Length: 114
Length: 113
Image 1 (tube, helix red, strand yellow):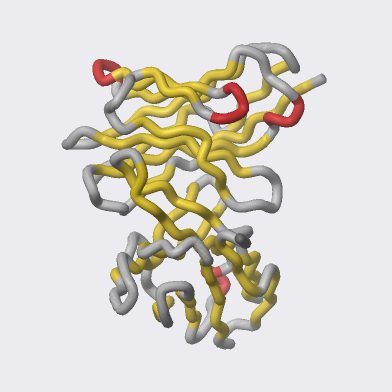
Image 2 (spheres, helix red, strand yellow):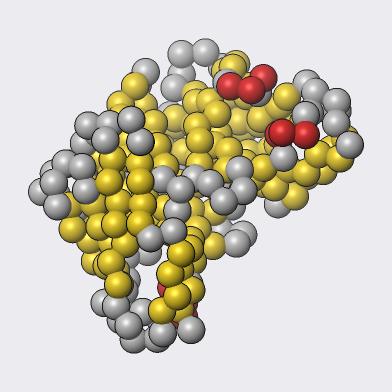
């Protein structure tokens, strides 16, 4: 049981390049999320998917697209990377337990855009 | 919308001392509150959560937190700090069945020998 896995771990892009961050979970969770983490700002939600086939914008969706490929996989795409997208990106999935959703996080992808 | 504020971006304690990390929340409906821990170069792990069953919540690694509605607070404590507690701690809030979770800015805990 690997939990939530993310690839790649590190990536350097030039401004204007595109890339896709991959995320997969093997816990059979319905909901999945993409966050970005910036110093002093905590985690901010980019997009989430409450179930297979659905996606919704979070707090900071501009410049990103997502695909919920199946129940296991949820990818994040940067079509034209900008330096402002330099960040650490976390994928998470959640399960409903004891009245609330508990989120489980991947190890993160550290992205630098030059 | 719900939100949390963590007071103090950096807290430093000596090994064996009390750990107190502060979190205040804002919510128009009864909130569910969480503390997560992030060790260097890792993702976040759930420490504990409050879902209205009991105001004092015990979590992993000896941490606990108390929900105080009158103070809109959910501070995290541990009686005796250990070196392995050095990490960044995040308070988070969600409401009802909505799984939209909002995180605080984080508090970095340093433990001195």
